[in-house]
Amino acid sequence: MSISKLKNFEKQGKFLLNGGFAIIAAEAVRANTDLLEELNREQMLEGEDSEGNEITPKYRSAIYAAQKPSNPKRKFLTPNLKNTGAFHRSIRATLSGQSIRFNATDSKKAKLLAKYGKVLGLNKAGLEKYKDQYLKAAIVRRVVKLLLG
Image (cartoon, rainbow, N blue to C red):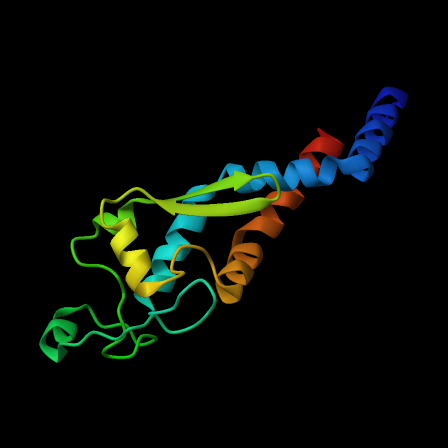
């Protein structure tokens, strides 16, 4: 390794130690908000809210619930908040400071949130899945690229 490469390595190492790691992590999250959005949709299809609780209130009609696609992780009368798919498709995740914020742009958002509560956002299991399946590897790739060019 040449002297200039060693100096660059040292410079990038100092960058990482002085807050650069947080910047790299934020860049990795920003670059893949679509995965966060998809995980939120999956969570709702499994009948769970952002706190890991079952989405309530339950459907009142067994006939309506029977028309819903089955999911082995969702109990029969537990809502999945998907009818036409517009609400699910409208989910957006953004990074705000060190927080990930979830929103939906569908016209039914206010009504659905008032009735079903905190369904936007990832619960602990969803966040762990995101970290394990994507974020850790993305950060390692970015750090290696930074240090080794």
